[in-house]
Image (tube, rainbow, N blue to C red):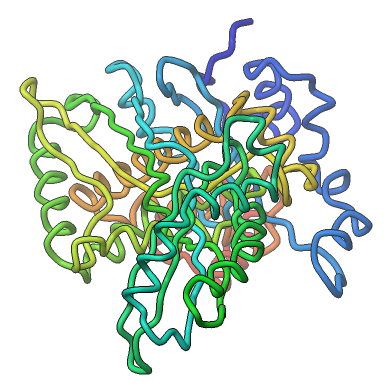
Length: 422
């Protein structure tokens, strides 16, 4: 079977059968996905090596989004999230883009920025000039800290310096730009910053203070675009409504905050599933949303010449395939196996595409029936389970909750009692 992300009716199967189907469609061994069972996933011994003072672990549901085509390749996408409707919404949006070729992406590369703060500098502008003159020396010193990275085609790309006015006077801030290849990059750039800081301080005639990467990953951008079929969306009126909603989010920071949260529902779920740093990605994305001086939407939706909906998004995505939990966490390894990607750039392509799909789904719901109808229908299943419904009872209880318009635990308990009595 060729790899395909099209698995109609996946939700109707048992958990075990879904896992088997995902393994078959992703062309991975079923045993490689066995760790997705919490009993066989992250053990306490492994957890104890990931963070400090371990006392246990918390499980987050991992679902698989279907229907994604990214740059011509089908991708089944693992998503770790506790929020109902996220996986289903992303899958449905990807289905609407599938007939139009799916998602297409472009990237600026895997370049990260490390900052070295220099204080107590007598002549900050002169210090800046001296540091820039010594750029080749600084680059050589930094590259010596990670010969493997350089051998893989990564390493230093440049040195910059600026004089920053603060409430405590001028400081000299040095930027090291580093191509980190398939790593998230924090350890590599932090090591380089630490190594060159003494020499930078000597050149500046001051002392180094902070030496750390910036999560404002503006040199590591991923862009995704897709065309969503107008008929599948619900017709021209729905397309117009989504375009108007997009304009609202672009112009108003109050709306943009929630609009972007919808994007991050998809982005963060894939970042978490693959063992990457959710906080770093979220910080980078939200800082990018204010790059023009005003917080705005990270995506844009327009009507194309054929009347379909054209969506685009640009995100800074500092994600990797090597180091950290990406390799140490067994579930993260399984998620990467399902994705079938080979580079960090490919992972970023998928993440940006999921963010755009998730955003489209939310905007469509808001512009038509309202967000609550679909969201609460799925939420009702969670409430039913919370009330004690067994797997074969969940659908019936959830359906009654929606019909009654009372999606609360106490009502679910009452419905469950009535169901069992009958």
